[in-house]
Length: 401
Ligand SMILES: Cc1ncc(COP(=O)(O)O)c(C=O)c1O
Image (cartoon, rainbow, N blue to C red; front, side, top):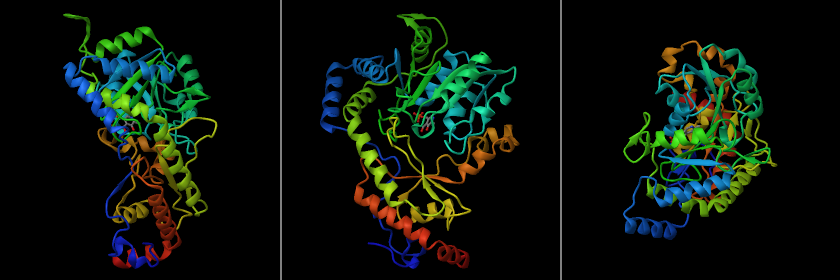
């Protein structure tokens, strides 16, 4: 059912175009029977966690896929970031973008490392390397780049700065599983990279993540830290935590891996459908992915320029939510506007003008194997209708108030 009059919008009392909520990151399941077979094997073995055979197999397969020497599976990416930061000896201050999920900053602050927020390049949404150096102080121990939307952040420029100032370089690659940079898989850059395999990521292990590195020493430390600091039976050599991935998660990971190309194919088709159907709306742009690089296309990101578009990002989100399209405003607000950073650094926004603008512009639309192409056509038709009638909608909203 297409809307032809703004009074038919659910926000103004009409029926929503979808009866069920469409989510941005509805989990991809892969081959259910394969997963159940693996879970049966696991139960037969009675080996449920503690570096079991599924975890070992997953680590080997991921390391081979990513072309990296070590892949250490962890219970989630937040704990993986915490462990990676410790293994690298980060302390004092670490520079990272504010335009990221709050876990990037929390993983540092949780261990009393101060996150120092850097502005982004508005074109790439990634940390702006030109603004990094001025944030370095005698307390700086490292830089955390984030590959936002799976598009590689400026790896070489950050590497140069890190080497010049003898800083560690760590990447939050939570979005970047399956992405390349200059043809090389993300995973082997910097001192370590950290992936998230959370249920909402296109490749998931229910909850999960991994640290990857080509450095044997760092890998050894991370393995011990993941397991309470054990270096062998009864031998604890340092402080550690419980960051282990369970067997059931690894079983899901192995199963997801078998469907990886299929899932990326669906995401890519969805992206192309959005791209052709949303083309040409004034002030509205879908972010682009370089055609000569791999990407999972798990994020369909719209950027809405309020000065040109007929309605704002937030009004669009409100209308879409009423229609049961649960578009999300990642990353809004920026980390610097969340606690405890907002109170600790009340003036941080002054150095983050591009971040502040960007957080008001972006939204993500539903994709993944749970979204059908026909649904995308309806979402896009609705979005076109909303922008075509933006002025009327705005005045209706004003009158309503
Ligand atoms: C950029 C970024 N970093 C870290 C995380 C945390 O991942 P996890 O949920 O696996 O802890 C996320 C989760 O979405 C993320 O988007």
